[in-house]
Amino acid sequence: DAKTTQPNSMESNEEEPVHLPCNHSTISGTDYIHWYRQLPSQGPEYVIHGLTSNVNNRMASLAIAEDRKSSTLILHRATLRDAAVYYCILRANAGGTSYGKLTFGQGTILTVHP
Amino acid sequence: ETGVTQSPTHLIKTRGQQVTLRCSSQSGHNTVSWYQQALGQGPQFIFQYYREEENGRGNFPPRFSGLQFPNYSSELNVNALELDDSALYLCASSLGPSGGQDEQFFGPGTRLTVL
Image 1 (cartoon, rainbow over the protein chains, first blue to last red):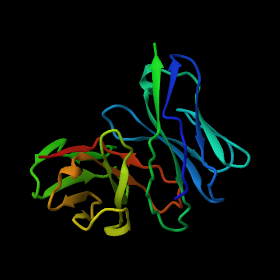
Image 2: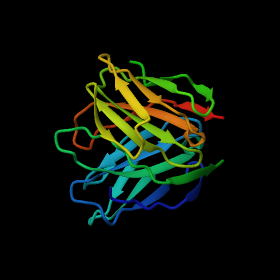
Image 3: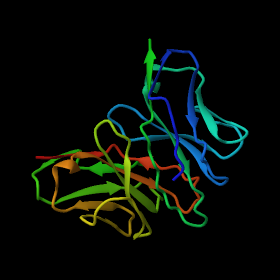
Image 4: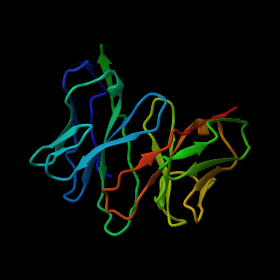
């Protein structure tokens, strides 16, 4: 599996934007970039995913570098509820099968200050 | 539409015993994956079932086994429990196949403590 590198921790203030970086220099051409987050005492939660183009949804935006060797998850206005561990994960395009393995790293612990 | 549920919430066993953990997938999902999460670590993939067949396995010994039923609910069985098996066990369901784009929906997990 291609490896991702994330900072161990980041801090933000409430209502400010947060940019969470992820490096994936060995990404293959067909790997999707997924982000999940895990709030305290809960299972992980899907946030967003993309392949080449930037993506937006109700939770966040995903900015993907042109060479795809890095990406940034953007929370436009952090809230206290966004305090969680954020995982950047590469998913292989397994063709016609759903080999659903998610390879989690250590993730980034996001602290949001009131 | 109900989400992914897991039972029990917490469980305490002693070394050498066997344990069965249960998971009910989100409605309409035919794929379930199991993960082990040790304290302070990210989840580690155990295996995945698609339409009642195992179709992927992580680096876990054979004493970790599973089943998926026709209604797509699932069980994780662990035999000969060891102290290092103490962890949060997570179940995730998804629609499949999807070629790497499927969103996985996780349950709240079962906290297993082995004494």
